[in-house]
Image 1: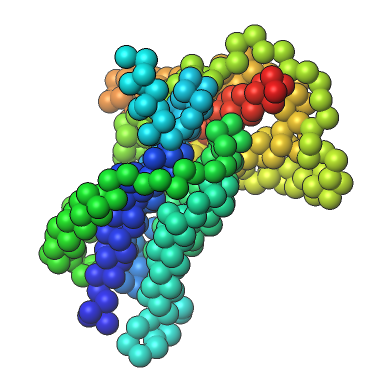
Image 2: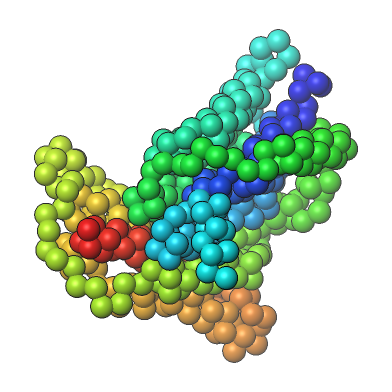
Length: 118
Length: 340
């Protein structure tokens, strides 16, 4: 089991890099936001994995239970998820306005239009 | 500590860890599928599955409150917002990629560096990791005496770290204002049309049966958050989900006539105000900002009142901001369809 001890963190890195790759190499703005949300989730997984304690339970106090997982990362990530969807909505709203202004949401087309108008 | 499930071991691995391995494996596969799918509609649906898998993973990690939030936010509202955006921007992605080589190189470089950094991380699940040494023991062992609530996550969220949560509520509110500023249909008078989904009798009947229990569940999650998983953030999103379901099935115009837009805007600000006012009242009573002990003669009662009010404020803001965001996206879709 020792060789799998860091498994969760490897997955975090893999997901983070998948997200980063989408943001870098895909031109479609909605796809970029999807990549960003994969990236974001990888950070959530990192925090929650760090909060886990072997043999612990959910941090809700009950008689007869003495080992609980760490509640602090849970609090941070819980609020981050809701803030994440609110900011993603803002990003999507920007994408909608870009589509209306440029007629496209592909990065290449947008840059071309910008050059023409200069 | 007797957790029956975690003691079934298979070849040295306990069952929780095996589930963890499988779920994270699925997660990576889904992420790759999102990347390689050309059709954006399919990608958006896959992000829903991705969120649901994440929620399952959070349950295995004992983060029940987080799982709750992720399931309602990621699998519900985020997917709907993506789909309404795609309706406006088109479902096909340009297959051309740029900076593929440079991108892959950068990604691999950063990945290797991060993996190198991970080598120093404490062993997964170790109870002596630095993260469990600082304030966490205080929260776990003292919160019952100081706050008096079984759910430690709620105690930390609303009381110990009430400042953070206040800030985050303000961020949610600000994002709502931003969407309103970008997409707000100022003088758009919707034509009365038949909602496309209302023709499906099964959807109509099932949603009619489902919507009241969803509202009830949202209220339960809101007010039972002190004792079990739940709280204002989750309840707000679930409440908004019920209204979004209603407007998807019965049409935006019907939903608009039920839920007044100015009221929703007012409520999104009211939640933040309520949160802030609780802080100011505790200031006026001679304590620190957001120190709820000042709200009643007995400090524990004060904490209970404070957390109840603060969570209510969070719930109201989150629910109304989510509804506001959805209505703005949906009315944009309607507007574009009318123009065509």
